Image 1 (cartoon, rainbow, N blue to C red):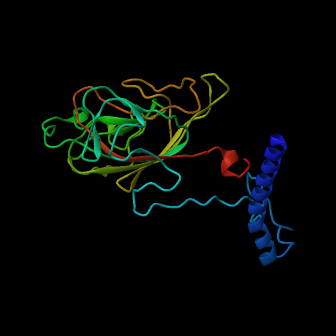
Image 2 (image 1 turned 60 degrees about the horizontal axis):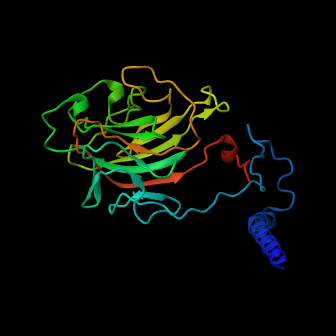
Image 3 (image 1 turned 135 degrees about the vertical axis):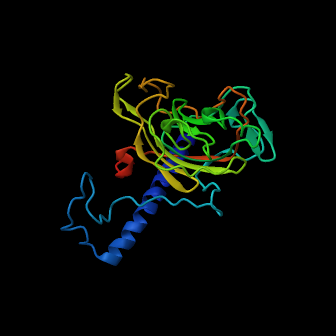
Length: 278
């Protein structure tokens, strides 16, 4: 009897889901007419027609109440209270976490394609007598391998592909919108994870970054050449579809601070973008 009731409940859920999905289509058919789809051209590289009334509708996501705050579908990785979402021993104080020379930290959860929001502050004034990479250095390593640079480049030059906003060792930022040390800086990053051919090191599709720093575009759909390397060419090696996010301890006692970190899990595969996945 329990199995019968469970089956009936599952059927009811399916019917409710189908009805919810059908209602917008039914309303559009009533508005546009039952012959709306007839004669519509096939969209480029798509299984759908232009203005296709049967194409799945975008899901609703409640936006944040304030700029920089997490939307409803975000995973909050750090809200200023504790490191419960992280593996590591950085200091937490006054709504921020601070690198304290105890090593890099990594998220307990794993991520693939994603949208990341993060705010950080380079130390001031203790490191103003340093230069190049020894000034406010950290890094955001997606999947532990693909780095967007964190650095103080306000009146501080370094090699171009090592600048703030750069894909470290691969792509310099388009511009340098760095704020002064001691001021909070904001990253908004879209990461598309690489796709491998089976469980081999051969890449079917390379990873990509689109990056905004302090509201300014610094990377546009930049191809990732492989795992981050210092003084060497980046190369790919197979890894899982999802891996932890890492914040770097550069190893030279630079107390970089971070706050307001949240992430949205995405599916940026072409099948998902074209609404082919159910």
